[in-house]
Length: 210
Image (spheres, rainbow, N blue to C red):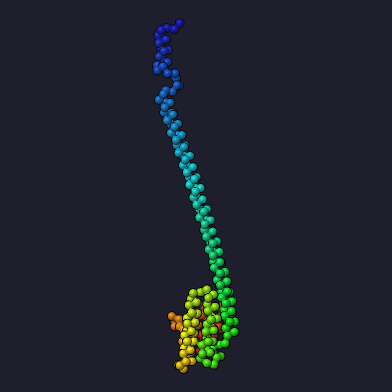
């Protein structure tokens, strides 16, 4: 039989809070939830950072790939452009060479000014040659060549007009060979700039007084 004193000792060993042992109170649950929420937020932030990092790396790789492709295409275009220009230059030179041969054939069908016997006849021969030259100049691609040819034609035309005056007044006519800005003969420039097939025609045209 338990004595009242023993019952009092037994009752003193039990919790006095009225909460079963091991049970968490509201404050403990709140702290646990806050920690869990914080950990979840950290995890989301880390996932977001990883996603942004992956996206950034992918974007950078795409930009590098685009730049490399653009560089390769640029090199290919440049090489193709050089080849195209070289091909065009060769074709222009070939066409000019053909035009030079045509000019020589036209001149060979004409009487040279030096083979005529009178100033009037020489003036006619010069003008006939000038007409053949103008056909060639019309298809000459280079502006500097065209300008030089026109200078030579102008000098020949002036000589033909002087020959006409000589036929009327017996005033001697002289051919004045045109000069370039550096003092060299225009005919020498034309020989340098034109195909080799034009050299004979240029020398003939540069001496209408012979």
